[in-house]
Amino acid sequence: MSEPIAYEVVIGLEVHAELITESKMFCSCRADFFGAAPNTHVCPVCIAMPGALPVINREAVAQAIRAGLALNCDIAENVRFERKNYTYPDLPKGYQITQYELPQAVNGWLEIDTPNGPKRIGITRAHLEEDTGKLVHENGVSLVDYNRAGVPLLEIVSEPDMRSIDEVNEYLIRLRQLLIYIGASTGDLEKGAMRMEANVSLRPADSQELGTKVEIKNLNSFRAVRNALAYEIARQEKILRAGGQVEQVTLGWLEHEGRTYVQRTKEDAHDYRYFPEPDLPPLHINRAWVEELAAALPELPRARWQRFVAQYGLSPKDADILTAERSVADYFDALAAEVGDALPPKKVANWVMGDLFRLMNESGLPIDAIPVTPAKFAGLLKLLAAKTINANTASQVLKTMFRTGEDARAIVEREGLAQVSDAAALESLVGRILAEHPDEVARYREGKTQLFGWFVGQVMRETRGKANPGVVKKLLEAKLAGK
Ligand code: ADP
Ligand code: MG
Ligand code: ZN
Image 1 (spheres, rainbow, N blue to C red):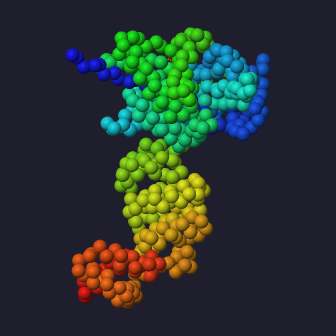
Image 2: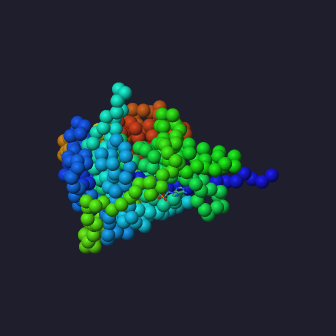
Image 3: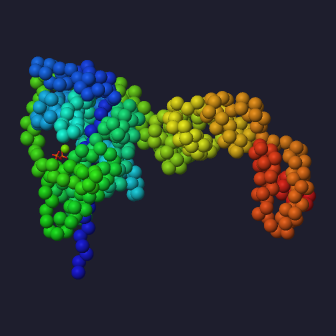
């Protein structure tokens, strides 16, 4: 009997990201309409009144170029908008203005982590287009809201380079992180700022040719992408194992039923009758402008992660946590600079990921809104490094700082929290505690050495946690040994 054939999964993604701009792609309506009543952010251009003419939004083009650069793409010098013709009630013009033959950015890549090391996922293209309106189905009627019609979108098309659902997930996380870092998109999935389409096929593991793919549309969360792919991979594998053939179709995903359904059999590009948009000039992108935009890009997440590992000696995992969001990475850079040599960066990182993140979680405050600035936090950590306070006290003081925004030193002085390191004072205290607990001392000396921690605890209690633990341990060791 021969082994059953193994199949390899092949996946390529198309991601639509709403770009952050003041106005829409081709008119001056505000692009951010969150919370507005339906059809209040509309004008003759975006609801397609006859004779209304579009004008290209320069900032949207800039955002597309930024994203293209961050994705290691070649930025096209000549771009052309085209009409993609189809009818749907959410599309007022009966066509969508998009870039087709001459997209804004091509031939890039995004690096992701896999269990086998880093891997580059090819970016075929990233092109600008306009969003559609939105249909709302309620009480047996369908209503249309054109507020979203004309919002700038960047469609980012990957090569069929992903080989597993985990790689897809990692790609989406990194892509979203990148777009947020450069300020191109909010990445807010709940508000639909990122919408995915997944293309997937299977092929025998040793084959070089691509199998027939299906496209799953309207995936609005990373979870939906994962679930839809898992369903589809299983469905295709079953067909292939039974000797059948996968049909090339466009599918929808029914989240609540956990299954895909056929929306239509495959359309071809020629069905859309693309042609150059006669109301817009071809766009020539000035090289100097691209260079200006490139120079203004922030340090990108991957580079920052590598720097955090190299410069601060952080573990890859910790560096990943601290660079996940740009604001947190900025905070850490500022904090580490303020702390300087006083404390190793690894320790500083633990304070951020431990105590600070806990306080942020409890309060729900983002890092750029907390009262503990990097300078103030550094002030606290320097008191710790100088052994003015111990770690336990530092943790308490940080809580107060988080609430009041005070300086660490002010709190320590007011509340008399400076660490007791004075050996003479501690020595008499240790002596007193041992004298008060003769039984425990006897048991300790008979070999019950676990009691040591209990003695430390007593000293800490008496000093309200302020005793220098190192000094206390030395004193206890000496006295318990009978010296
Ligand atoms: P279409 O003509 O259907 O739009 P494209 O070739 O433009 O197809 O690719 C669309 C997306 O599908 C891209 O992300 C691409 O990587 C992916 N893709 C193409 N062929 C396959 C395949 N055989 N299996 C999986 N994904 C594929
Ligand atoms: Mg497609
Ligand atoms: Zn408008």
